Amino acid sequence: MKETLEILRSLPSVDEILKTGDAQKWLEKYPRRFVIKAIREGIDAKRHEIFEEPKTESAYDLTESIMSVAFKRLSSFTSFRLKPVINATGVVIHTNLGRSPLSKKVLENIVSVASGYSNLEYDLETGKRGKRYTHVVSLLKELTGAEDAVIVNNNAAAVLLCLSSLAKGREVIVSRGELVEIGGSFRIPDIMVQSGSVLREVGTTNKTHLYDYEKAIHENTGMFLKVHQSNYRMIGFTEEVSIEDLVRLARKHSIPVMVDLGSGCFVDLKTYGIHSEPMVQDIVKKEVDIITLSGDKLLGGPQGGVIIGKKRYIEFIQKHPLMRAMRVDKFTLSAFEATLMEYADTDRASRNIPTLKMLFQDRTIIKKRAKRIVLRLRKRTASTDITLSKDSSQAGGGSLPEAEFPTYVVSIKPHTMSVNALEKRLRSASTPVIGRIKEESLLLDARTIMDDQIEPLVDAIINASEL
Ligand SMILES: *Cc1c(COP(=O)(O)O)cnc(C)c1O
Image (cartoon, rainbow, N blue to C red; front, side):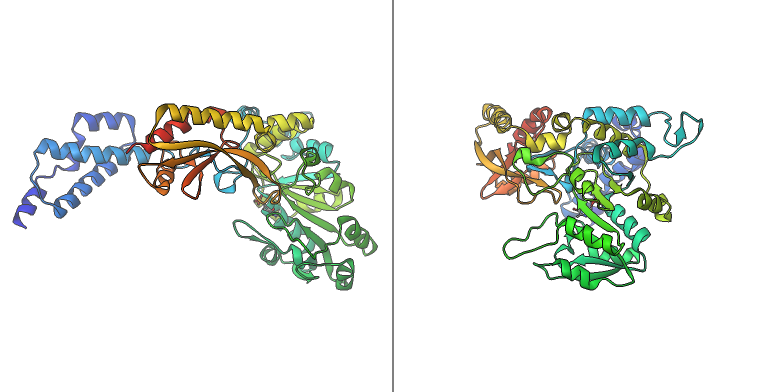
């Protein structure tokens, strides 16, 4: 014990370490508070080590080993925690990985609007105060055929706002088959409680008929709500009421109809063999009063909640106090405008919006990319089995759950470590790589790997495979 105390006494102080040449260099480059915190943690780590295993070291060695720990801590304190990752999961709209990536063009528009002042709420024609939503509203009207539109922070906010402003204190009739929970705790019954409206469930889990809605109508009915089932599908003995039938019934009783589309798509997916997802434009044509959808799911834009529909309802919604609490900033609006502009020509949208491009890219392109990765890896390592194989990707984000997206994956089977160890190492790479484990292999889906990520991906795998 006496020996341990003596060794502990030989530990340098923070001040002594700060005087070293290396620490002086750190101070020039990094904030002082992080340098001091890192050195302190370096000394603490050494102190623990001495307690565990007391051994005498020269003053030079002590300082060296403290500095080496401190530098690692300093690098971690001063690097951003939110950072790019390589999505090799094949899930295109991956909510945990930031959903839709934005194109260069969209990013350029954000930079040009946000790096200086803009006419966010200024009418350049009259020189008076303008409205922050006018910039995107005309495009939304043009593209969807809706009478009016507005944008809030996300689709969950859009649903809450619409229910709060149109149905507070009144009953909202929803089919039991549509009382869904979307990932990340968005649950229709809970949102309804928050909005102050009263849920009136009708039908059964698998079957809801028009007469179920009709029987539930009384003087306090505030709305019919139809919710897209998003991430789940019912198969077999099922029945739901079509939007057309619901709108017809609603008109007879002067009840507004709202449809929460969730993802919402502006391009015709039938050309890609997907028949389950109607276009937003077609739903507008069915005379639905209010439609809500996400900005960063199939639309491929920034996070946001798009509300489109009849002018009188949108105007009413905009007057609700929650509207101010949910308002979007100039980043979102500039990104939305640039994204929506691409939809003026749907072919261009499919080419230029990363989410759509990734979902519908030609399989030969995915194969080529996967092959490039395989060849590069084989050139640089012999310690792993690397093969190209067929697999299937997913749209993700609760979109198109039953659609098949045939793809190619790079399958890696390490010889010198477990596949779990490799997966973990790749997650902690400087540009983390997120793949998925299937049996004893790590699969990297080439669909969601971007071309300019191939080099960092290969480097990360080589680094991670080294012992
Ligand atoms: C995704 C989704 C939401 C929530 O949208 P966010 O943009 O994630 O807030 C709401 N309703 C449905 C049906 C959805 O699919």
